[in-house]
Amino acid sequence: MTTSPYTSQTAFDGSRMRVTLLVDLHEGAQQEFLDAYEQMRDRVASVPGHLGDQLCQSLENPSQWLITSEWATAPPYLAWVNSEEHLETVKPLQDCVRELRSMRYGIVRETGGARPGLGGLQTAARLGDGVTRHALTFTVKPGSESKVAEILAGYAPPESRVDDSTRLRRTTLFMHGNRVVRTVEVEGDLTTALRHVSRQPEIRAVEEALNPHLEQHRDLTDPESARAFFVRAAMPAVHHVARGGPEPDGITRHALYYPAREGCGMALAQLLSRQDEAAAADPASPVHRSTVFQRENIVVRLIDVCGDPETDPVRALGIQGPRKAAVLARLLDGAALGVSEPPTDDRAATRLLTHADMRLITDRRAAQS
View 1 (tube, one colour):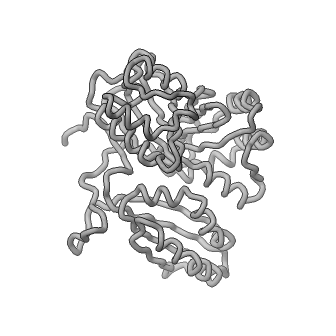
View 2 (tube, helix red, strand yellow):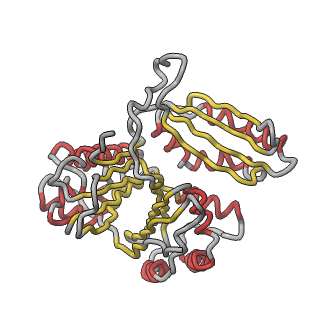
View 3 (spheres, one colour):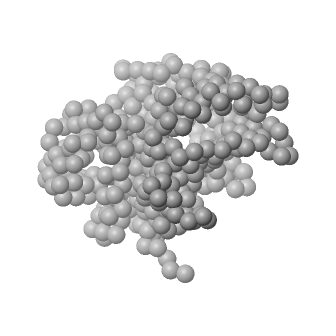
């Protein structure tokens, strides 16, 4: 078996996507659940990129249901699932559901021949590293930034071992102005790990301490309020690439904030992803690993870099060549960062890098059990 020089996972390969929802209902809620599903399915069917879905009930346990949906590609699904419209659409289901788990897959093979016009198949198996990456982002009230940074920097990490198959690897927190970004890396099941973290007393204490400073109100004792907050805060990883082999010495972790112009978030994330994919085979690039997270018009690129990023600001930004820099300038909300020129030379690239680089608050591997 040959070894890949790098690992790569992406939402931008153009393949069709299958989403599976495992639903466990409260006892006696079956009819209420069916009524809610009938209300929402026409709205879902009208979403661009949606190809169809099925609702199935377990033969063994009537409280267990399965919803599968098929999408032409991943980007339209991600745009939909991260929207306020999606949150409102699924709200009628909340009173019926005891537990819900979502899983997303690219379609690699199928029987029955090609389906023209409905998207392609994933051309090759993705080569990952056994780690799931996820991010949360939210804003705090202006003027509270220093207090929030103090709260976030002071928490004790939970035990890394969640169960026999799930382990927390790393949690890193950044701030850019009043925006907080928390990235997590998990071996095993992400939902299980996040649920484990949320139940830890030290984490709950931190979350409660943050509540008075949040711009979006939340009540963690109210399941609907807590769920709405974390759904709005979720920022999925849309691309990850890492070089193979051992990690070099002198690696530092940075998060770069790329606010996009209205409606350009997905295009900006795709541009950065393609550039990172091309750079993975470039031995001159200082970037050892890169993960692009995106939600609506917010794009964050988490990079592990050999040395100081300012030594090679163009490659650190993930943009090489004047044409790519010009495209970035068209997609980026430069005013939100305080920059007005494309990063076509080292001076302009250094300026953008300085303005985009997020403040590292804490970078911790969870304590070993």
